[in-house]
Length: 273
Length: 351
Image (cartoon, rainbow over all chains, first blue to last red; front, top):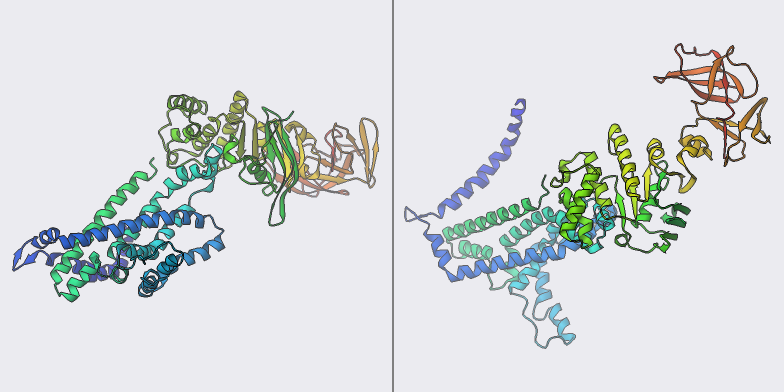
């Protein structure tokens, strides 16, 4: 108990977070329950009856889930490849992989608009190859949002997975092989289960990131809205701060539920003993 | 005919040869040890046999078939790792059952075999534990059970005891030898611990810089090292360079400067000009106790150290410094003149 004075070191951070995060959060959440001087949860009931909002919520969840799944499918093999590289090469490759995170999301989204537009790279190429006659409408759909978000968040899952995979002793894979497992079986039965903790952390980061992303869906989604852009519209365009606060509260709750569920799943995969 | 044969195998990384034109053959049912300092190529040899790495050159035959290009999972060799390499997300039971499940053995048969194997390694009742909850010795026994349960054609040990403490090491090596002999399995054992290798092996191969310096029964290597490297590795600290050698039938007559020596001949002992002897085999005595003559040198005590059971002296003689151990109550004083006797049956010639 001699080290009690060490808690003093926490004070500045604690003060900052209390003033600028915890108090505003309480105020935000609290403000949604008061209307005309009375306590009511009416605004939430209204939202969940509103087909327009439910559609936006559905799109948001679909985009977030698809982004997360795609990141897992694309990220897993890449992360395994990266984790097996010699240190020098791995550093360079990881830096390249993280690059999307270092570019401005506005610039990144405009690049995708050029690539995915009616006269964009993809459509021109497909038309030139004679695969399609009419240009596809990819831009301003959920698909465009998903592409943009996968591009943005893939690095997150790569970093967490590479970290976990590096710590897997390669002798475990050799042991599995010496016991009769093919490369694929050894990967499936040893590498995959031991990577799950990293996979879950990465998935949470990607999911929460996609759920709250603003710029990418705003630019690539066109008229199609997600919760974050809807929130912005309510606050800035309609000046309805109470509705905006309620949306923010709903987003937080979804985030907490998802993190809780994933952590539960993670605990299940943790080696016991 | 030998079960396993490495023929002119080479392994190289970045133009650096780790093994070059390496040859080894192992008889069925034998336990052979690869012994040597780190970097001598012993682990490389083992990993090559397991299939974890490919030879740049040469051929590996097993049971008369060419195994050079057979993938790891088709070799049916058990491998026991220095780090144990137990699967941390599986129970002891699932670890041991892993190989059997891949072989599509029926669950009730798996159960019978896993339980019997855990019994053999004295781990009955541990099947539902996870690796984290086991001690080092228990982990290593699980690793051995896991490698044995698939009834491997060959068992490979990579320094399996080096992470255990001294007492456990002795017990475990007895266990390993017992299990290996009971099941009649051919095994290759890699270690840098001389005592460990000598105590459990039918044959020991002493390796240095990617070649085998000597391959023989432990007792033969112990008494008659063939090369200076082997001699040094197993504790022959004293060397004499001779200038003349004559074959006298049952012994060699040797000369270095004005001093004459006899060395008893032994089968396989090379005819060279370099003699070697252990500190334990040299006999030290006062000028009164040992008379000058053949096989005797006179010298002065330079350093004396206490080893517990005996004293060790470094003695300066006209032929250089020699180390000698002697059990005695009252040690010689530094600077005292003593004589050293080289028993002719203990003085060996090495390359």
